[in-house]
Image 1: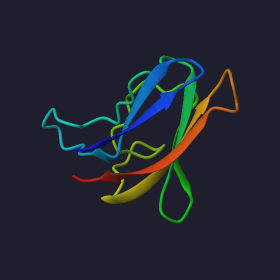
Image 2 (image 1 turned 120 degrees about the vertical axis):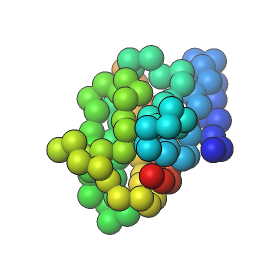
Image 3 (image 1 turned 60 degrees about the vertical axis):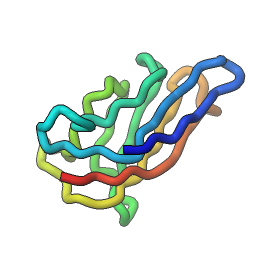
Image 4 (image 1 turned 90 degrees about the vertical axis):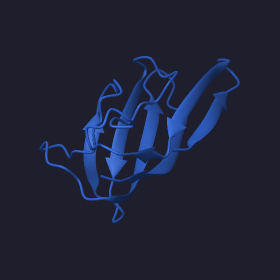
Length: 100
């Protein structure tokens, strides 16, 4: 899988956001793991029609490709909004591909 590297200059913190997850229980890329966020960020996941399918008030790197009801989402492209809860001006938006 490939990753997007995002650097926040004002905090000198590197945040790495993957653009692929493969939640098939093989131990590789099963979770959407974002490094460098600690417990300061919320995360929302949207489907291609803009409907929010998953939300984390405090993201803890545990999204496994399921919706808010715990059901597996279909393969495809999803969009995320990652927001710093301490500084609303720090927000990252992007997409990821989910493959099973």
